[in-house]
Image 1 (cartoon, helix red, strand yellow):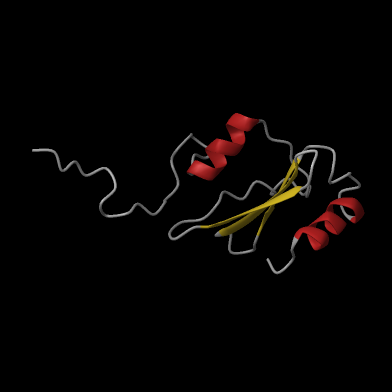
Image 2 (cartoon, one colour; image 1 turned 60 degrees about the horizontal axis):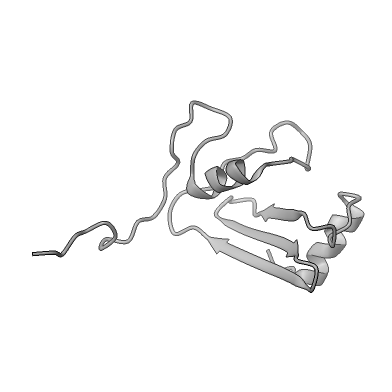
Length: 106
């Protein structure tokens, strides 16, 4: 997870055989599956998104042996939110702030 925009663009070109500037969102996950980087070109420049989970892991979707997996927007949001895409649609563990969801209205 040390690579920046240039390094990730190189991986997209060399290992995936794709153009990093084609508008696709390229997702990279570390071995521990608790960190994710997403590379995206919006037509004017690159965006690099970085997510670190405080608890839990991202689902391992590369058990098929392929390093390339296509997801639609709904599947990506499910992956980010901890919903399993391959099993029984169970939610994976995620950190929640202790004050989140607590109403303080009187």
